[in-house]
Length: 296
Image 1 (cartoon, one colour):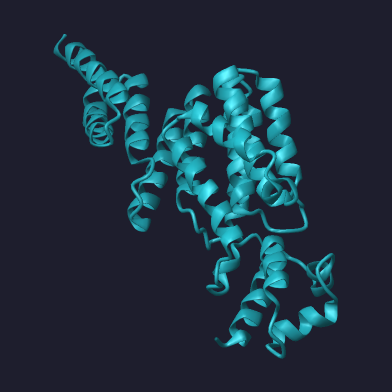
Image 2 (cartoon, one colour):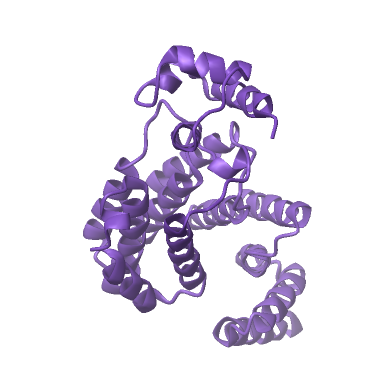
């Protein structure tokens, strides 16, 4: 392993984020040590590299593959399970995992790991208990555990902020939701090394939803199309069905029923492939309604 490559990458990201060597070193090591790491004079320890990666807003494995300890493996597995349940909207099962891990020292004694639990607890309270105030307070608490304006926004922080935007959207606070989404969108300008490509898709889709509620159907569709281009480029189908449906929905609201049909047909097919019969059936009914309107 050529550690000078790591040093160069740290220096590059530090400059992009806008941190001095001293600011990057704060709370981690000395400025002189950061200088030597960036020059490739010394090997950074795994602990130091992990802390540096957090401050620069990237995963430590972005720099190099390190051997995962059993502890890290366990936390990663919990994170994987929560993401899977989140995508499938299985909120009760999410809460079960959160409750099971809340007393686990691996989470209690590590702010980053604890943040994972708070984030998902906030999602549960918003979606199931419908307690918007409490949910927002928990999401804000989760974000505060790691968020610092002097460092790049991490992928986890982006996801939490999107969840906060979704919550504000559900309360009818559309301008507030857009402001939150814009912060995340700005973060993409200096973080093009996303490990989870679905974050950008999720952001674009949720911006589109707000714009539709504000009556700006064309701009909403533009964001959906940007999302579809992103999905195509990254070969990641997450959100493809939702984006196609939303374009069709916008066209329907504009009274362009004939143009809306192909998007709705594609969305129904994609949801059916995903075994989401509830949504595929809903869209198929909508397709029949539009066909009836066209025939008239």
